[in-house]
Image (tube, rainbow, N blue to C red; front, side):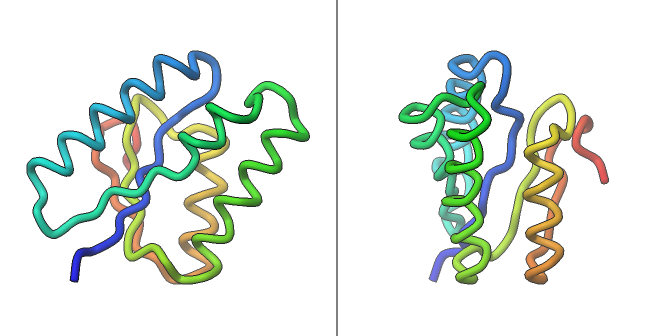
Length: 110
């Protein structure tokens, strides 16, 4: 059974540019890690809801939290040039639920 890995990456600001980076990360993992299922549910949120509207951003975060709370995620992998405020929330969720958090880029070292 594959390990389900939640991919955390900054999304705000240049949402479309960051979505493109996430698609590249997904592709790389899918092609190079045969026993890992990369999981990026918030791509649907940011393409359907407005990240810059606080109420809509909260809806997206609420949806993402469900995946943590229901124990669907095996690990969280951090990517990007820095740890954003949203990623800090995801890291806290992971810690609350005992999910390992792994930095994959220099800017996301814990």
